[in-house]
Image (cartoon, rainbow, N blue to C red; front, top):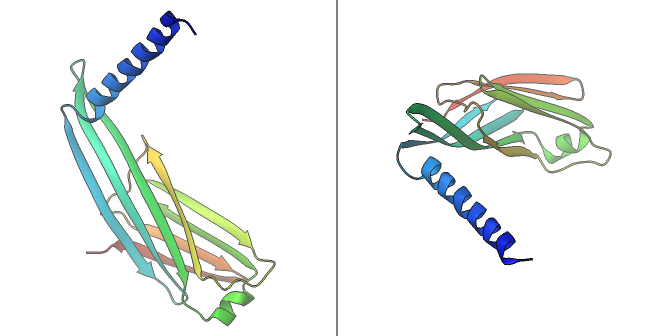
Length: 153
């Protein structure tokens, strides 16, 4: 690699760092939101944690907005280990005004772990809000329960 290529890579990295710094650190207002939604039904209980960051700033005389959040959904079976081991087909879905997620599983071996979880990092998408209600649907072996998650206060 010659010196010109190395210089170009270094210059590009510095420009990228500078732009990132201006967008996420310098100026503007950053709002952090961290809350947990909770709820339960006869056989299930769930929590949905949201850690969000929003950035409002100005670029070239125009208002700008960036968002990112990490979420963690946890669903727990309230029955016995024996009841859990009998489940063969399982599906859950949770939905908010900001988005949804679901999972379907088939167990060929008895399962004793009663906890199901999922999570993701989202950037540039709608953030679940503290006043939202998260709808949860759980189906297993011909059974179905729905319930709501609300922010724990």
